[in-house]
Amino acid sequence: MGQVDKENFMLVDTRPTNVHRKSFIPGSVSLPWAQWEMKQGMLPRDLSTRLIFYCGGHG
Image (tube, rainbow, N blue to C red; front, side):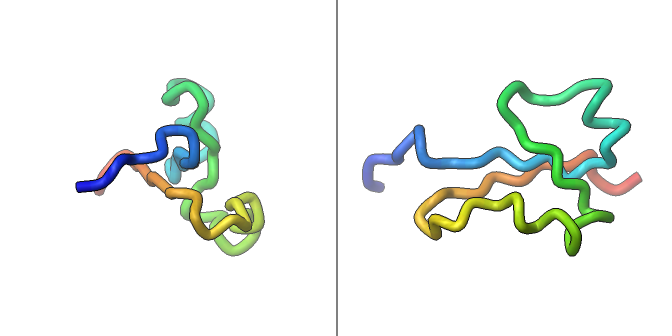
């Protein structure tokens, strides 16, 4: 496997905003799944940026 560019990524928290406010991974961006259509413009335009999503799982 090749070298990974550790600087060129965005960590996206897809949990609800109120959950993100209580606890989150530092540096993550809150982009709740329920608001995806409205907030997807927050994603980087650079297509080489790795997107890493996390959520709270099925509840």
